[in-house]
Length: 115
Length: 111
Image (cartoon, rainbow over all chains, first blue to last red):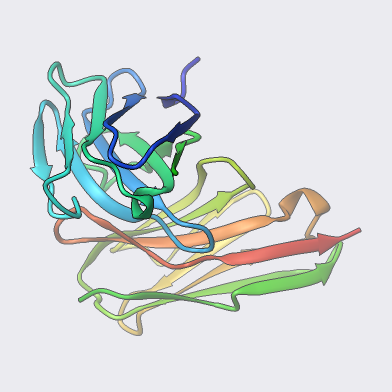
């Protein structure tokens, strides 16, 4: 398909485990964003990539969270030593350029549940 | 610090009515303002993007306005339909290219 693809759609893990969430952006989109969303709230910014580099990672809550985009396309969000408070829907979005002139296109998200 | 507020938090109207959703923001230094809809269990779908230099954008039955000086935007939906039922979120892109989001308005259109 032509949209943003996120896998897995659901992930249940035990407290303390490591998880990886994958995002496949729209082909040609240089900007890629990760957000997380809790029930009844708007998305919370985590990190923004422009190409291969993290242009802004100020939203990552702590050093357990890390994201990569080694070839400027697919991105992986990595969470170490998961905690119950990490449970949320993790959303990925991509856009042309720097996102100021074109809308963000979102995937359907990965619902992470930490038990 | 930019803050985005959406009022009301929930709205229920009969089918066919015109309606307005409100969004306000505290810092006028924005690149753009975007309106999205979110269906349950789904990601967000972009509806309209208004550049900071623009006053409004239209797409079909949707019209969004932007008054940057007063920090306000409205989303007008004409002739509402049950398929319009969803949560509508507005977001502003700040000078750091971050989208700052409101909490959304949950809209229910009654047949």
